[in-house]
Length: 453
Image (tube, rainbow, N blue to C red; front, top):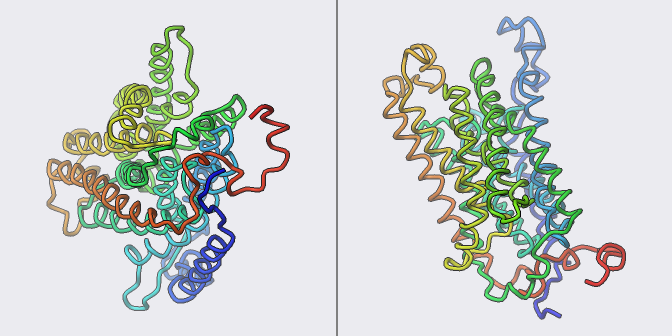
């Protein structure tokens, strides 16, 4: 039996209680309803000549919010249930850190984006909830690289720092550099992917092979993970279009994402089949690489990339992501000592980076004949201090934004990894990873489900 103390009876309740009480206090000090969710909406409506409640932003944004919320809790959660003995940890810890992360995200994003200097308050509405879910996604992606190897207390720390770093890099990329990144190829996927990979690299386990027997799936765990895949796949058009401008931008983002996702499924199946001498498919590829088109389309989704351009993005990223699972992940583990449980490098980090650069190219290639003069101003928000920015300059800043996201992920992840190496967190020993029995009460598990294990 492992000699590492994995008892979190004191540390986990302490972190949950103290941090939740801190959230209550901070919300009491800072968070208020915005004008569209406040009881003064009736007066606001009259003062602004709004004729109907249907013009409240809730009715535009709530369907997208529901879809994104399902992706965060059901999609990400079930995608991580593929390990034969870690399904509770996959979906349960995902639930825990997303529930904490969205509260901290409302505060962090509020301080950076919507703090009213006159009152010192943060005013939240339905769009704030969508952005908070986006912010959580970065930490949930990072969890994918650490799945089965860390304690729930460590995951709370990953989320605390992950949300904080996310809010800072998002402010730099979207506000200071004035990049467009509606679906978060840069700020969510590239950042979250490299953040998790950097933490995993610092937390390298030289004897992880002692848990190798549990680092794999069984038939029913792969089916559960496929549920997560399908929820993510179906709702990704909502994810990429949720916070775009009302009208053509939102409409176009959904269409482009829908097409890229469809295209990536076919190329994933093709490469997966080609990689086996018998032509059989690998469920790991189907669960993950089929989503790469949605990740890579995140930045360019609201641009005029054209429908066939979207299909090309999905076509290429499906191939690249599947090759990642076949060749890059084993290479990273063997030569760079990087243990990536879910393969987030191939689904999030690499396609996210590619998506950022695709967005930069499409932005730089934008013309007035395609967008119209008003369309260029609307899509790229060339207003105020950015009114004189050209599309070439915008493309350069988009590329720079991608590099900022990667840098924040790698440097931030390395620092957080060092914090998590301090031996106080109750993480499992190398021979006790990927096992729910370490942190969960597992009833009639061995006899009923896994005879002989």
